[in-house]
Amino acid sequence: MSLALIATVFGLVFLAELPDKTALASLVLGTRYRPSYVFTGAAGAFVVHVVLAIAAGSLLTLLPHRLLQSVVAALFLLGAVLMLRGRHGEEEEEHIDLKDGAAPTFTRVAATAFGVILVAEFGDLTQILTANLAARYHDPIAVGIGAVAGLWAVAGLAIVGGRGLLKLVPMTVITRVCGVLMLLLAGLSLVEAIRG
Image (cartoon, rainbow, N blue to C red):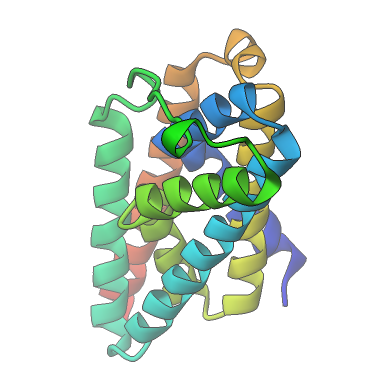
């Protein structure tokens, strides 16, 4: 297990998740309900999300090396295009309420956060990114740890600090940096596919 890989995955996933709708959902939930309850639910959903992405990435490794690197390059390119052309961070905040005016107990808030995050993350950019990194580096544990840590860090920032971060770093800068990094990864994967 490589600490450098964990740090790399953490950075990429962190940047990709910052402008995401789930960060906004965490922010909204965190301003309405007890932050620790919201984080517990969100953290659980992110673990499920990463396990599914790692499994998908591990299946990709069964492809021949050139084909695998071509698929990974195409997926990184798709992610870069989504980041650079998308409107991440500009979505309106969603209004999220617990059912029927129910009391905001730990179980209800955590379950709501878990459900919202789990559904919102399926097929999401960070899930694609995590699957690609698992396929590229063949180290599912390191990729999993880095991805979960990156997702948890964004959720924690969104829940606790939220809008303060956006005052320091504009969302467009975060989105552009992540898009450029994904373009670089696409290029590296394409070079490996050509070299065989």
